Amino acid sequence: MESESVIELFSIGTELTLGQIQDTNAYWIAQQTFQLGGTIRRISMLRDEFDEMKEAIQDSIERRQTGLIITTGGLGPTPDDMTVEMIAEMMGKDVMVDQATVQNYMERRQLRDRSEVSEALIKMATVPETATVFQNPVGWAPCISVVVKQSTLMMMPGPPREMQAVFEAYIAPIISERFSAAGASVRVYVDSHESGVSPLMQKVMEKFPNVYVKAYVALREEDRGMPVDIVTTGSSQDDIELLLQESVNYFQEIVTAQGNSFLIETKQ
Image (cartoon, rainbow, N blue to C red; front, side, top):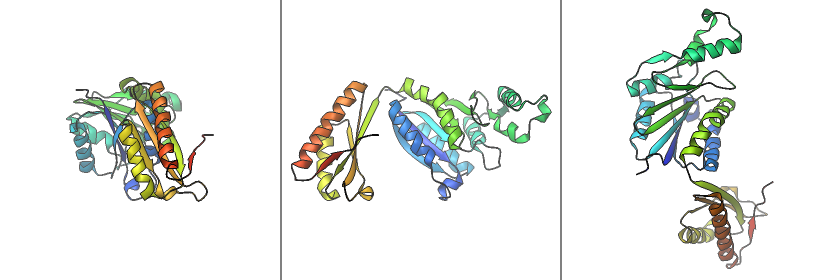
């Protein structure tokens, strides 16, 4: 059985679980992953609490077919940044200072001597033994990769600008290479209540097993109706585009047959 079929994502930071900031990273990563053909099974937010983080990552590794585990956050220089130490302990490894990362810091900051490298930078250059390190193109904390059992763990910094640059440089190619599924989606608007649309959505998913249909009741617009996303996945882009068109046509047919309006959103 294929062991690399799904992805799990962990956003690390007590500020997230307290609602102090929104987890825009997870939203962005989920969008990118879908477009790259990956399947995210689970997205979780974790406090900066060592044992809770360790237990959550261990559970992810033990779940069937978790091929790629992505984390964001916890790689900075402050005491509550514990992702590296937590992963190292979970693996039964020590931590070490990655000399290539230190050299990268010195070159970028034009430092002449190792003694000029701050303790904060040294902490961000510290990684688990056996880790593969990818330099951050727009910040300081690098992307760190380790392999545990059947799972590859990719640790990314939390600041969105850094996370996006690291994801595009190092993680997007992995997802594209390992995951063969393609995906497409379209948003339509139905002038009907949820109770009337839900049975029709179910009919679409029953007729087309590789189609997912989701209505957004809270986003209803007075002039257009309730937005509904139709999402398709498959092995090739041509197949999913054809499937998307067929499922949209069928949905439109059964919606309008009940006397409701149907509008397909035009992307700008």
